[in-house]
Image 1: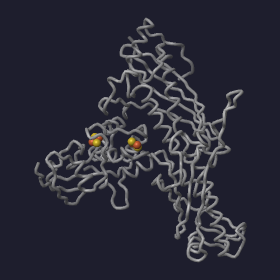
Image 2 (image 1 turned 90 degrees about the vertical axis):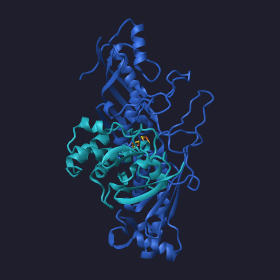
Image 3 (image 1 turned 180 degrees about the horizontal axis):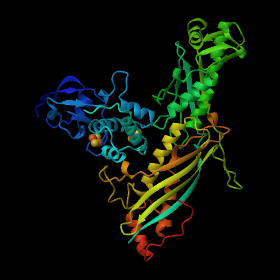
Length: 160
Length: 343
Ligand code: FES
Ligand code: FES
């Protein structure tokens, strides 16, 4: 099928590409734009490691048609750090040893960011709810929950 | 219909590594002209922390800052040989190989420094901050960087070291069948408290407590990280996960994450861990390592706790609500067992 053009912002910069109408955003990011932040885990919306923000909303890029991103702002984990300065949630993940293999980390960080930007002072239950679409095989979740609560307590994550 | 509480316990005597052909690991270390060191290994860090642990071990043995050591596990085609990252062998086997390589490299480093300072290599010490000086005379010193540059561009020396760890092959005694396939054992005990619903067969893990003896904890936070993550996996194997629910009948096997059940962040239980450090005589700085035993005691402890709660002994994993309900039915009702211990 004929390819269609799509233009959108990716972590603050303008990007353009030609995509097949059925291409998903994850494939476009990884194969077309060399943006390897979001990972391919299941490709069917059940693991969460491909999570991105689209216009500030949490979305699974494997279930998002690339063409639907026209004119929108896609943010991935790669846009969280400011140069060498880590985002407060990344800093908290590091301090709390909240990653082992790191495969879930892009999705966890993005889900945590969406949560804290909407609700800067979540309860433990709200944190659990916020990451419940993300599977982690290594950490047993506890360190991730603690890191997100610590990032919230630091008061450094601003409401979007 | 009621919910019954139960407590179960399990202990592990866990062999670190194995002894198929001596279970060898190799390490190669070399310095770059900027005085930084690269450790080449072929075992892969899957997130268990092997890179960090071998980095600490290399830095400590070389006598240089940890920041100046880089561990490269990039390629098992071109790297030194290793049996691999499994059998909880990483810290112990690779750690020992790295120590051997780092000792040899340190020897060359001190010889090169001795040549520059015109002293005996035996009189030199490192300060762990990037300097080498004469014992008792800190002013007669040279940096590791200057030494590496002198070795590279003046002396024509490679500051490098080779290391291997190999355990003697233990053959089976034909008379007694005895053999000693292992050099290091780690130990643990774990107590699990559960609640079993005798109407739905559902098990909730309420809390767990454990004590682990795994030699010296070379990186205590990473030990804790492995123990917590491994316990989650233990709960998962005990109560949720299976690729073949009706083994050996392969039907009804899960095909994806929609069907493959695992506990999520809302299903975890409070878990308290005590780490007992008893440095192992043949371990790198006394370390044995946690590894697979993080998950092991959880399974039997939960099975015992389920028995304690409702009197059903489930002998195959996972312990599903279906198996528990069948057991309760066969027993003519839940049969709570006497409960030991407080809390
Ligand atoms: S890859 Fe998108 S949810 Fe798994
Ligand atoms: S750190 Fe390995 S999957 Fe989460």
